[in-house]
Every structure is written in structure tokens, then in C-alpha cells.
Image 1: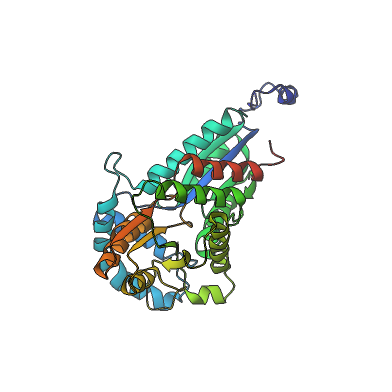
Image 2: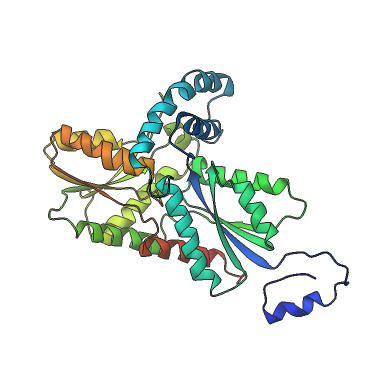
Length: 354
């Protein structure tokens, strides 16, 4: 007998099936939250496996394979895992023996499930990582096995980039290629200018600054960078980031000097989007700015790039160049503000299915 969500409107649809029909799960709606990824541990080989998957993605590194692969295997995957592993050790969630990115993504999935499935029993919420585990193909298959013949996948990136949103979509569509009976699917578009998202960021800033006994002279909205060449080829990420900052600035009632856009995490010899976060911090300190705050609007969850690169290294850099007070404003994570954004976007994109 077919099993569908136990609502009366579907009951009659199973009465026409023959008695010997094999059991088939169907009629459910899947929601899959997808974040960037995380290594399984901080040891050399765990980091190497993670970096290898990440840095062989043609969306992330667009160099010709003949140029990039010898560098990757000869230098990067030999030297970098040790340094990256030490950085992960500094911000590892020792309570659960995992990265905070995994912790927050799982919590976001659990909270969204509680909020949605109680309202409609057909909804199944799950989570996956683009690089590492749980993998996108495994979770799409699991949702399909549970009877999800409609799936909304949600790349957890407010600003669109081919290096993030597009590679999630690539992997998810590749998974569908291997399926004989494919579910109907939707993808979540960028939400960099969504009022709910902007309000949540503003609320998080006000809340955090309210806990301090000092106020920053400058606040930096630091986004993960991409090479300038990607932007010049048509990636809208740069524009999305600046629009987020512009709307956030208007919401807070701040001027251009109080809230500035910068870009972090550059890698390799190419020129990346500017101004660079680290260079801006050094310049501000050298010019006499004593108090700054940094937030990361492009990251839905705190991770290596926020907890270590900003909260630790950027703070150290600022003080070494003459600054005095530094604070990192946490990402939205699984807070009430953060969940309000994820739920609002999900409900909007499920319209017509519920």
C-alpha cells in the first residue's frame, strides 16, 4: 500500500492500487539546508581530504587543470593541511568533537524542522555539506527514500556566487542524474536584499554592541572574497555584497564611514575583490582608529573564516598596528534572528507546495 502523509485528501488516492502493489513512500516535501562543508577532524589527513575535494572544484579554482593540479598536489596538499589543521584546532567545538559550522547547520535544520513539520506533517527537513559529510547526494537520496517527491534545497549563502551557490546546485543536479524517479525540485535564490535578512543583521549588531562598555568608531562588513577575474566574467557576488551593506547601513542609520565593506580570505597570486579586510584593518589602526567591530554578513554560521581569521587573527593584527578595542559580531547562526531568516525564506520558496 502506498504511504503518503496522513491527511484525508490523499487517502482516496491509495484505494485504486492493487493489493500486491509494492510499498512506495511518496507525498512528502523535503527541505535540504546546504552549507559549504567541514573536515571530519583536525588531523592532517582529514584536512587534506577536505581541501582536496574543495580545491579540485572547477567552480572554486578556474585555472586550467594542467596548471593547477601540479601546484595542488605538489605544494598545497602537502603543506597546507598542517597549518589549516592548527587553525581548526583553535576553534574546534570540543563538546561535540566537530566544527562549529557542522554544529550550527545541524541545529538550524532541527529548529526549522520543529517549526515547519508541526504545521504540516508532510515536511521533512535535513542538512548537507557541499564538501565533506553528510554529502548532498546522500541526503537527497535519503529524502527521496522517505517519500519526498518534492525537494527544496537551500544553499546557505545570502549573496550569490558561482563559487558557492552554483557549485551546490551543480552537485545537487548531478545527484538527480543518477535517479530514475526524480523528485520535483526548487532551489533557493540569493536573499542578500531580503528585508527579513537585513533586519536580522541589524538586530544582531545592535544586540552585540549593546553588550560592550565601548562603541566602535568603524564597523567592517567583511565578506569572503573571490578573484577579480570571476567578477569581471559576470559573477554578481561583488554587487550583492555591496547592496547588503548599503541596505544594512540605511537600516542602522549609519553613514558610509561608520559601516564599510571589505573582503577577506584571499588565496593564491591573483588579485581578489578589494578593499582587503586585513589591509583595511591595518590602515585604520595606523590612521589612529582605536575601536572597531567586524561582522560577516555573508556567512550564515560561524566557521574557521570568522572565528579564527577574524575573531583571532584580525583582532591581533589590529592591536599590533596601534588599535586598542576590537570585537567580532557573531554570525546569525541558530539564534532567533537567524532562524527567522531561514524560516521566512523557506516558507516563501515553498509557496504552492504547502
